[in-house]
Amino acid sequence: MTEKKKALLLGDYTDAPWHPLEPARAELEAILGEAFELTATEDYDVLLRLQTEAGGYPLCIAYTDCWNRELTKAQTAGLLRYVAGGGGLLVIHNGISLQCSYELLQMIGAEFTGHPPYQKLRYSRTAEGEGHPLLEGVEDFELDEEPYLFEPDPFVERRIFLEFEFEGKRLPAGWEHDYGLGRVVYLQPGHHAPSFRPEPYRRLIRNSASWAAAGRVVSGRERGR
Image 1 (cartoon, rainbow, N blue to C red):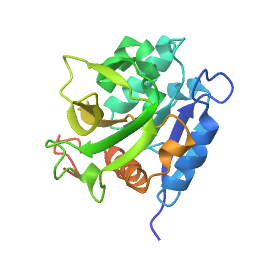
Image 2 (cartoon, rainbow, N blue to C red):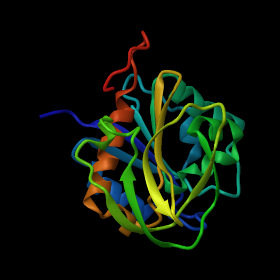
Image 3 (cartoon, rainbow, N blue to C red):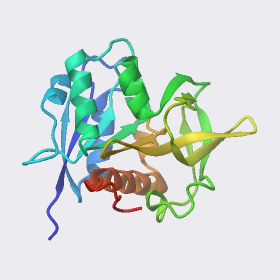
């Protein structure tokens, strides 16, 4: 039997203006439970001690709802150090609220600029995403969701693998890139529990978690590409 990897889920149980952690935690436990031992917390100071070695976490999942507050400098430095050192970061939907700290905005790769009303959206792979391991077994899907919009960071080379259709345009809904020795993945869907229910999206979350947690070898030759 394969030993489960450890994953840290960071979010907000008690001070979440729009996206409380518990519904997402329950869904992610069901999606990832076979491969990951999931630990959920709203204590952002865990970032001060986050590491990948010696019983640490190869994966951190951000479902933070901290739109109105910045992380402390020490918390920000802890997360940056973790990913740059080889940790995997999976950011889901409102986890992009970490952008309140510019250094984390740059690490995620884009800035959230707002969203039109909640509505049915269709998600599909991009040409760039063809053959990417994140999309293995993932079919196109439809979902009632908030159409988050983004402004890309001009200094980050993102690989956009998922897009959604909105007002005749195809806009980014999922991307990945390397940060130091670590990997960052962003997935746009995740407003509430039903967002996690379509089987193609559950498969995408499993793929993303495993791929991000795989990290990179010290020589710079990537695993899983």
